[in-house]
Length: 376
Image 1 (tube, rainbow, N blue to C red):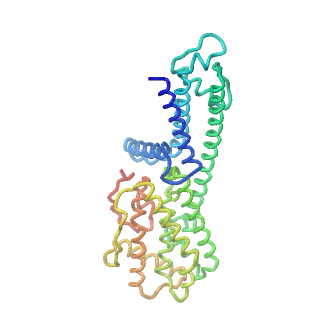
Image 2: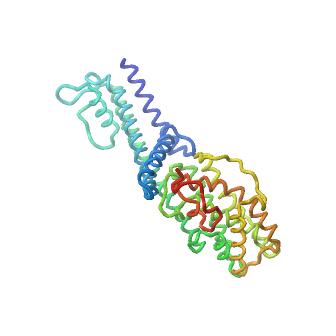
């Protein structure tokens, strides 16, 4: 390969990595990136394919996918930068770049060593630049290495901070439901004996945290690939509880007594933030199935939805909460709202290798799910 072509390829490779670092760390938008986004999807597909060999332990294998993606992403950036620097330096070995003593090796392995050393923050190398422009090249490489390392460390810390906040939200919703995952339990605890004045602040807090979770996944798409054994840490469980909570509030509560809550900004924020979160994940990570879902009437809805609404109403009555007197109208309203978000959750959960009975233990789905234990 001609020297100029080798150097041009090296410059292109370095610029490619810098562009990917910029799009991943600084630009920070879901669906952007050159190397990172493809690496994430390939790694996730490889882990999903490996789960079949572990049987019921396959879900545990997927818990390593998120950390593995970060390790592979850093390794890919480091290797590509080193390779790019080696391609630029290889034609210069023995002339513009020489060793401190003895003969200068000119093989490509030596070029990889020289390129990697020039990008390292600490340490030294036997190779030294002998001309003005190779000294500038060494200075440029060291600045690139320092910046990429700093940005990478910052990115990883921000990812884990966002992950901690997401997990805290999942645990909070789990505790608000009395560790049942049932949105009716959450509504009952938000308004004991029909008093929602204190629980309103909890609804507002959860809505705000759900909006933060949406933005976290938008800024750090790698969060999607972090899976935990406990289903209540999953985005699908958090979104389902939040959306089902709003659906029950707006369909089951009495208008005269609790109309102010149904129309409140906090409930609207919780509804929209949760819906935007699952929609963003659907757009960024194709989950299969069709996006457009028909609105269902009470007669067309799955029997489990009607049973879920009736059991929710009974739980609210036991808590002393006034519910609508028109059960048929309430059922129709519940079904109409649930048909907007339930298909998204039904695709998101198996995509993250959860069964629907783990995500929706309240029974909003048929017991005989078509997907397998890990959605494969």
